[in-house]
Image (cartoon, rainbow, N blue to C red; front, side, top):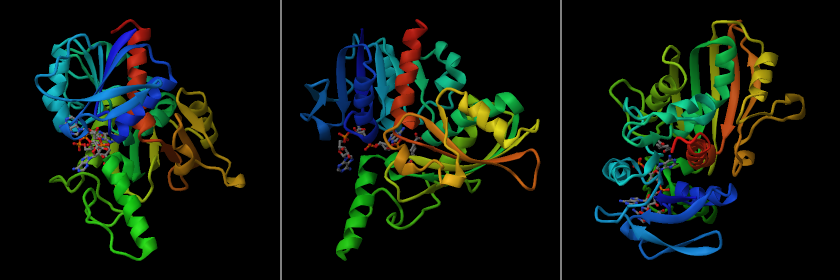
Length: 337
Ligand code: 25A
Ligand code: L14
């Protein structure tokens, strides 16, 4: 049994951590919940008991915590996760704070689980949600046919930007229905109700956004640095689950049927691909579920080594909280804790 901390417990990902730990009967001795001063005094329910939310501060006593699951933003993680690690906790961090550091493993259990063993700073990073679902789907194809190129466009839900962003879509839709002016925008640079925004995170000097370059760099670190990756990340008015239109080229030809077979046999993937029945993965049906769903698998008509796929998964579960809890379960199963 383990002492576990959840940092950012009142947020979108934090709430999901609690549900998943409960559902999977994670072996918890004591659970501690941290958030900012805004949430101090609030209580959250875990396994039928009310737990108080603690304010995260430099003076908090963090001794005895063995596993820390963090999702309170990159700034909070940069400041506090080294303190948790120093106090003896293994940190599994959901933010972008440490992902590209050479001495921090970036882990998706189905793809590169063994990387979690060696963690010089006591920190393991959880990849970006869009990267996770893409590499889970592509790993079996890469093993079978060696992917050389990935061109991806994402259709990302608002929950990726946190609990306030969910509220922003909801309130804009409500305002539209009631015919009144929406409240001031906070999380998105443009209206998100009935609209798609081709910007997630900030723009970089090369014209890509940070979210797009995360998909490039994280795919290299997790799957293979030899794959040429390019991404366009788009925010869509969907509450939960991200979708991705993925085009790949492989060194060895692989048919759509073979690709479906290797994906169907891979851990974490579910193939839903019956176009005749109008069956393909959909964001509203992926919500609250664990798998990475893949459909619309088809061979490119312009390149016989090219394949198109449609990949959907719940960004708050496999894209964040579930993947982190699976990392913790892996550490326990392998005695790597
Ligand atoms: O900095 P980043 O990396 O860009 O991250 C930005 C946001 O993305 C979400 C998360 O939003 C984060 O704030 N996020 C991060 N990683 C993610 C991932 N992998 C991810 N989303 C998806 N996938 P969130 O709002 O869902 O969660 C924020 C949690 O972090 C706590 N927190 C914030 N600052 C903290 C802190 N904890 C400790 N110390 C700090 N300095 C935050 O707690 C929440 O649990 P809280 O107490 O600040 O918020 C409690 C409630 O208040 C609402 N709220 C938030 N901001 C405001 C607000 N209400 C009014 N005004 C605000 N400005 C929240 O909705 C929450 O319900
Ligand atoms: O890097 O706004 O994990 O949808 C994932 C969600 C960055 C923001 C990360 C979003 C975050 C992103």
